[in-house]
Image (tube, rainbow, N blue to C red; front, top):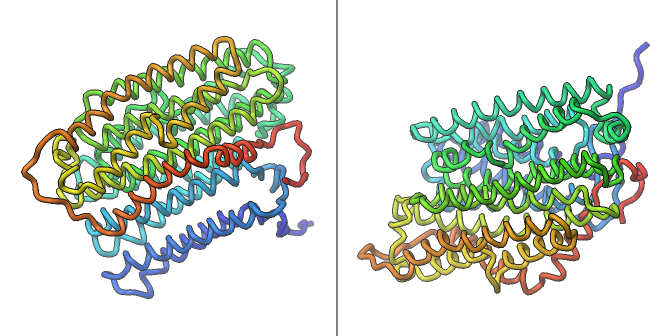
Length: 512
């Protein structure tokens, strides 16, 4: 009467070994207090989390060097393709950088014994963000988004004695609950319309049976995922949460949360576009909506940063602006010829790879200054070029790359994004113009920080940050230079990995 249990083969598990390492890391972090003193629990749990991330990175590099099964695995709940592999690799490298930021700038402020909770939450959120990029099943989508969101809510308010952090965490929870409820309602409409939770099957049926309920369901999904990306008008939580959270948590949310949401939205929209053969009025409407959302988000992010005096709030608005730039790439879903998935995924992955180092470097420098001087106010960065020339140089490199100026990788990533939009022709040139104008406008508030660091005098004593944190900032700055020097190789890598599994793809095929 009872069927045999489902036991996945190694070929099915191999693309998800990194997630298994994260689960093992969570267990090790939670068990660490039983094998150490309360005073040593933080360091032991950080070590366990770091080892889990390193093991996950190594496993992804091994997977990258081999042919892996591409297709819908585990009864269609998860997807294996190169886009998911590259995103998970970027995410785990970034999470490891955040861990180093914690060790160098914020770890000393954590209460004894809080480390296991903190790192279990960090690895849990990372696990959810990995799964967000590896599913086209709407039920698994909800589980992955909530697996990423719930730990993030707690991380935002983890500084238990910090009132601003508690208020920011509460705002994050309320916004997240509202967005999740709308997303679930949209999913229920899609399930009621088509009787399936698989996006590829929904895409195939939607091309024959659309209408207003379909648009409402898609709108609900856009609200839920747009919250993770901080799309306007779902962005109000972002500056307050970044200001109230610890520096390492703010850095983590600035890249990981937005990147996971963008990769997930890319997969969903391109699957729908494949069902419509990349043409039709519905796709054109959806492409315009996404393009307008990206334009407004970039504009609001940049204009909101003009008046900020807190460095974390400035970087929060900066992250909103960059999310808008990347969202514009997703508007290519109505591009004729069927090349939209590879082009959009390649541009997005390339931008995310560069954005990782830009933001990690900027937040690391901000964290080191906060640790040494106890301030997040931009005016207190006065004379940093004299007080610590290397630290000021690292911040300058990261900020100029965020603007998109040569000879830094941010320039190459932004130019390539504008190129792929321009190549599509037509109304996409409007998006190119919007990105160009916003880039010029963003120079004002980034240059303001540079002016304070180099042109404003200060009587403050020299800064002496930790060697570990300074090393992370230097590595990020060097990577931004080297990634432009080797930009063609980086572009080939991102383009080669921009291979989304779409409905027409043969299941079980081998990835090259």
